[in-house]
Image (cartoon, rainbow, N blue to C red; front, side, top):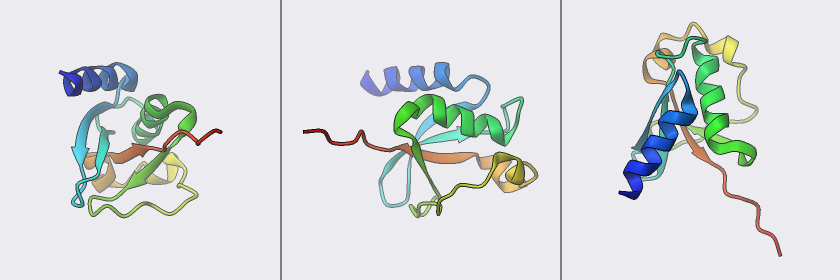
Length: 100
C-alpha cells in the first residue's frame, strides 16, 4: 500500500516525464525518471527529479550504483543522447540535513 501511494505521488509530481520506483544493482532504492515521454526531453527528467526531491536535491546514479560526478551537465548537453532518452535518469533524493 505504501509503495503504491508513493508511486502515485511520483506520477503526479513528474508531469510529462514518467516515473517509477527502481533498484540499482547494489539494491539501493532510486526513482527512474523516463525522459522520452517529456515534451521538453531530458530537461523534463531534471525538472521531474527536482519536483520529486524538492529543496533536498538529488543524486543521479548509473545502473551499477555509481553516482554521477557533480556538477551535473546541463540538460541541453544531454538532449541528443539516445541512450539517456531511452532509459532516463536514476535519482535518489538527498537526505534532509541533520539539525540539533
